[in-house]
Length: 230
Image 1 (tube, rainbow, N blue to C red):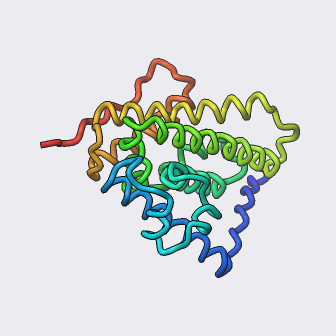
Image 2: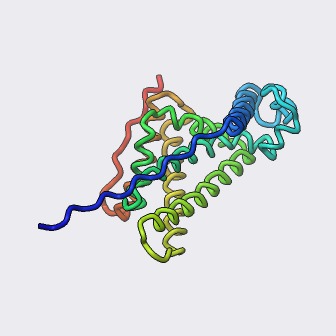
Image 3: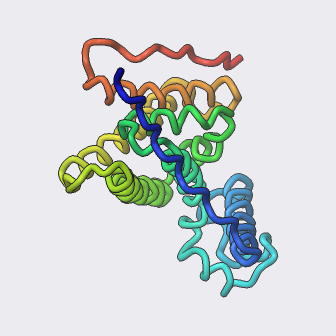
């Protein structure tokens, strides 16, 4: 009788954040919320760092402790979603294939509203080159994080030497799939941020990784219907 398979060790629990870390996170979120509110109400270029600081109840100096510019504060919406997805990725079993873990991480974000901030920023950035640049920086940041997370995965699974070409090609492919999903979603739904539209975006993100995992064979991605926009 073959020996039973030894289950993969569960991932270590994340340490409980300190009060200082929680306060910093709350301040960062307040700045982002204020920046996005001003973006919606006034439009990019019609408010300043001082306006954001006043709305967030902080000083100008405190603002620059967190962000280097107005665009960076707004762009943190995309960072937030991508970082949440990466946290879910790191919770997957070490022995699981990386692409399967990436797809499962997105599926764990079951509430379509989790993609709402990123979707809104993508919609708003289409007419603003500065926001487009900030969003691209967020995706580049995510690529670096994917490489680091994949390295951790290889180390935990005892996979030996890391193939840098594999890691970088994988990270670039995942990011390209994510961008493609965003482009297709916007082409179908425009600036619609209804739950039905966001459900489509979430599924497109999942389907794009499924296509990557299958080697982009002849099987086509499931076609998501457009939401009712009456």
